[in-house]
Image (cartoon, rainbow, N blue to C red; front, side, top):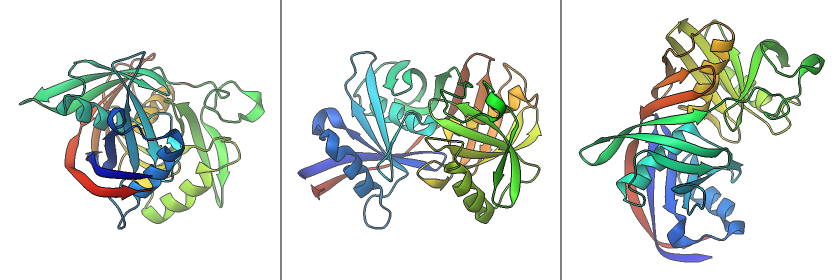
Length: 290
């Protein structure tokens, strides 16, 4: 397939970066969407990013988001990605509404935009209710349980205790005394991501509790690897931490990602996530073949 004067935007949320395109204009064929994601996201040889986000028409909401990882796999949801999406849509006047109703594979997500001088600088997302049902996450429970809360799991030479949470995509949250370095995050993250207990693989978060209102999180993202931040992962960490008594319901928790901070509040029913978004640049590729 060949496109001329192909326009795109590049945005990041706490260093988690995405390429965004208006697919209402380009109409990329379904069989080519994953191919284009792999091509554009490849570092050094192309634009480079953690993923590609398509802006699509919606019959259920104001607009629809589809997000593909850099390996071409489609993700159900992404907290940083949907914030990038919200800013791209509003700042480019594709849809000028606040709040913004966004259709995703998880369902309809509400984005509340903080607007400064006509542009979006902060986005708060109502992430909806977390999923703890093992069958829906999905995760294979131990001893035929309905939920996986603080269960043990073997990864190479270590046994971790994990809590399984879905925020529209699966997460394995592990509380640690000391935060992992990159070597250990790669080593254990890769094993846990594709562990047999996760039939569709999983995102892996290592969570260090600092107080009732503060924590650090490092993430090994499914199909991506180590990233600077993860919005749904931050939400999953606060949900798991609250269930385990580390945080309090209705109290905002500052989650320190490698790329910056998110504020996450879990009411016991819904999760709210607030954080900044920045435009990196916009560009045009004269001739694009894929």
